[in-house]
Amino acid sequence: MTKQKKKAPVSIGDQIELQIVGLNHQGEGVGRFHSFTIFVPDTVPNDQVIARVISLQKNYARALPEKILKPSPFRIAPFCQHYGACGGCQLQHLAYQQQLQFKQNLVADTLKRIAQIEIPVHPTIGMANPWQYRNKAQVPVGVEAGIVQAGFYEKRSHKIVNLASCPIQHSANDETVKVVRQILQEMGISIYSEANHTGFVRQIMTRTSFATGDILLVLVTNGRRFPQADNFVQHAREKIKNLTGIVQNINTKRGNTILGPEEVTLWGNHYITEKIGLLQFKVSSRSFFQVNPLQTEKLYAKTKEYAALTGQETVFDLYCGIGTIALYLAAQAAKVIGVEIVEAAVKDARENAKLNHINNAEFHTGAAEAVVPKLLQQGYRADVVVVDPPRKGCDKTLLKTITIMQPKRIVYVSCNPATLARDLKYLNENGYKALEAQPVDMFPQTSHVETVVLMSRVEN
Image (cartoon, rainbow, N blue to C red; front, side):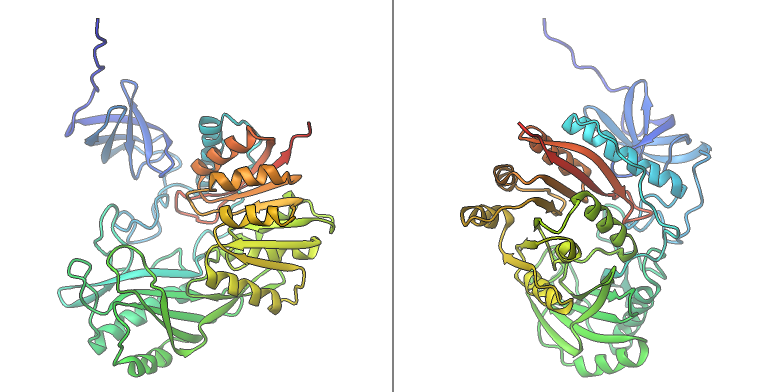
């Protein structure tokens, strides 16, 4: 006798009443309708809502809120005038202490669900002022009714929300984007059309140093020839206070990749200088540098605590970027070795070592999963390994090599709880034990969370 499929208790277009009981990893409210899971964006736990179903899958549905029958005590008025249209933030309608609680729960639940790991997950380290924390703005530009637009995309679309301001950006980034938009309009510089792959200016990027206030402006262009470059530079220098450099990045490919491989410095420096603790770092347009420098110091302090260095250890920093973690740990280590696939970042890392008079650091170019096995064959060994991978997590070949190398401790810095849990599961099954986790709120008002996990080698 064949088992009949259980029919979902809702259909697309249905209007249903829900109590929101939690949040998913994207920050959407989670409700249950006759035990069937419904995801509802822009809601918070303890909201009672009327929602309309917009999509239906085998095990869940999505619905949009149509009416808040009874607001949660955790619900607050969003600070940003663009919230709801702009897709940059997901949690502005949730009180900040509950945002921190959500992120702690997200990490703990993900580790338990994916890795079957239950370890102490400490309360999320938050910010006293969870606004104006971003040191980098990166916004697409477009044209609507002859007016230049610049801002983030609407949720689930490529339609630009023309931002009057962005309250999570450093105020200088905010102002720089507005001024550049005005200059582009006044000069009549052509704007890129994604649909037609025509037009010149694609993106505005600006980086502001929290340490010095200096601003780097990057224009991403669909082509190299910029006949109005001198005029643009003059206008920008006159109108943008603390501007120290203007760079043209050339990206002629279709698609979502923001930066191209070639750059021209139109004026001034091609970098700004940022600080973490007592260290200085040159940060260029393509440098990977945490966007929240105030929280970065807390993140790295926890990384240093978990590394528990005595001055005798060799430390591997994998996916090292411009060397920030390696150089931050160098004073407490015998030697630090960084590995990074982006050649320009490795060059920056070496320059940053010289800038800070650090002589016990070396950096290698290449994919970590290719470079680390070669270093192992050459006789390199690590006492402590720090990994800070992109959202996709660590390559399995790399994880295997780390277990062969047998460091005493692994410190895993993650921006994605799901791939963190996957990788911890592998390490837990291959000679290491996860001991504790510390979430850090690097991205207030969004559903993203950074996490540091300490792992120790299991002695046979």
